[in-house]
Image (cartoon, rainbow, N blue to C red; front, side, top):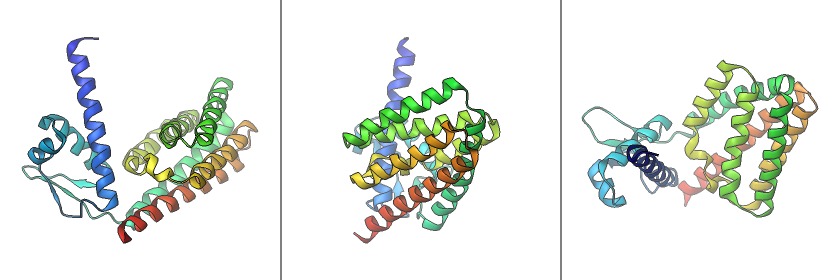
Amino acid sequence: MSNNNRLHRTMTTMADRISRQLAEEIISGSMPPGQKLAEQALAKKFGVSRSPIRDALRQLGGTGLVEIKPNCSAKVVNLQVDQLTHIYEALGELEALCAKYCARRMTDAERKQLETLHRHSEAAVKERNTQAYAEQNDLFHDLLHSGSHNQTLLTLSDELRRRLAPFRRPVFFHGTKRLAASWEEHDRVVSAIMASDPESAHREMAAHLVNSSLNVISYIEAARDF
C-alpha cells in the first residue's frame, strides 16, 4: 500500500470515528439543535487537523443531523421524530420488497452466505457483544439488498440506510432484550427466504423494520427526557 493510500485510509477512519461520536452527542441531546460546529473548535477538541473534521461533518450532513451552508459553520439540526419515522416507513417497504425478491432470486451461494452470517450474529447475541452484532446487522441488510437482484431497490435501500446510519450504532441494541429480539426477527426472515416463501419474507422484514424504528425512537425520547 502506498503512503498516500495509507494516509487516506487513516483520515477516513478518523473521520468515521469523529462522525460517530458527534452523532451520538447530537442524538443524546448533548449537542442541542442550533449549536454551531466550527471546524477549528472541533479540530482542537479531537486533537486532529481540520481535514477529517470536514469529512466527518460532510458525513453527518448526509444523514440530516447537521446542516451545512456555504461559507458558514455547520450547525446541529433539530431532529424531528416524525421525519425519522417517515424514513423508517419508506425503508421498511423497500427492505420488505428486497426480502421478498431474495426468497425468489437468491442463489444457493448467497443463501449459504446469509445462513453463515446469521449463525455468527447468534454468537454475538449469546456473548452480548453489541458492537459485533451491529456490524453483522449491517452486513445482513446489505446481503438482502444485493440478494434481491434488483438494482433500483438496492440503490434506494442503501441510500436510506446511509441516512439512518447514526441510528444503527451498538447503543441502540443496548440491553439484551432488543439484541435477542432483533436476532429472532432476522431468524424469521432467514427462515422464509430459505423456504423460498416470498410473502412471509416480505411480512417478517416489514415487521422487523417497524420494531427497529420503535426501538430507536424510544431511545431518543428517553435520552431527551433525561
